[in-house]
Image (cartoon, rainbow, N blue to C red; front, top):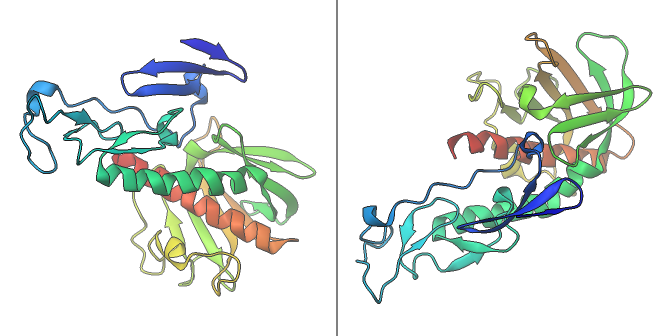
Length: 260
């Protein structure tokens, strides 16, 4: 184990070399823990094709799910940034497909989120709105909002998120997503689409459906009462819309991580 600059350290595990925060409190909310490997004695056969292991057919563990496979079913080495591996690691077919999609999120959406977008921000029922730049912190744990004032929202304290499209307002049918991060459940209201609809529409440059705002509900530090944050795109709306679409993908990733 060796220390490196900017609060991270290199750790060698049975699965490979990992670059992790020195202080676990600063671990990215997008990170996943390494799985426990299925013990060798409990997997005499490949858990995919049922081939029996012997001296010729060796067993391999998928670094993402920890299950046992033969070389044919676990031959791909794919980057796994959510577990902080330095190099691509061996994964089964199912896990490699998931990891490849996540690599795109790390390579593209996270860069958009940390770069930030400009929004007109209003907190709770306040009449006053303020133009602010909203960006994701470098450790991915906070949303920083900077304008004449500054405040932060911790991702782990967000209870719900709505991404609005052009022409929609909170509560209308054309709200494209509802994302519950703390409560682990999607809203059952019929007026709210499933959280995947924004992704399926692929809101981006040139798309007929464009994100125009976001409504967050979160619990401030030391409080159990929910506050609402309303953000509308302003100035360069194309950049802000791309930021909202990236935020939606981030929320989806966090939600799905509850089952991993």
